[in-house]
Length: 321
Image (tube, rainbow, N blue to C red; front, top):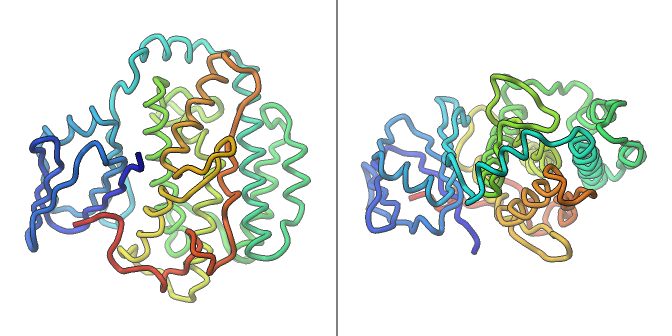
């Protein structure tokens, strides 16, 4: 089943009734959405009120809830405590996972990330530069930090020599931040569904970060967000505020079709397969890691996929009432 991504961006009351998410806006008609159809819920207005019951039911249905701040950037996430019948056993095995398995998985993740960046540059600039060669050289655990070497070339090639990747900056950086936050929530949701704990990373380690594993597994998906941002930036419009029109393509991205083991799947579904494969590697059930080719279906702008320009998109989308 294709899960829906719903954003509520205006004053409203949300609650739970008869297995439905009920949205009662201050203006307009009441809307209902079956919880079993919901994958990600984005709450992006300070005057949204909700019942405790809807949060509990969303957790039971493995729905990731994103809460945004005054800049419309997600600042918090609500995830289930347990999304798998063998959660306790799985977390115990995850905590005892060996370093070789973690390093092999990190190698596959970074290789896929750099390959994705190469595809973005090939489509946007017609030349992937040295990135395909760097991807081939990634070793177990990436001890040579080829991820960093690729990033230094990639950002300037994609957005210009003057561009600097800064988390708190506006413009292109704010678009990247929003897109990454949406992908991070979707990856965390998939991780919880496998019984793994999102705080136990394979590479990222930070005692203040409860989503280290999500930050690890989302790395190969970042080029998808970069590609969308490149399309928005290419429209020539200055980005002063994250409007619904600008946020819509990132929410739509979760239903973008990617290929997993030869089968086309919506990204939100593909992430479940990706997280399950990562689980097998981390727990030692499979030696060879599997990372889907998330950027393999990207096309040039005008191809009718996530690469459509912002001017071609409807102003209201993503299932919001």
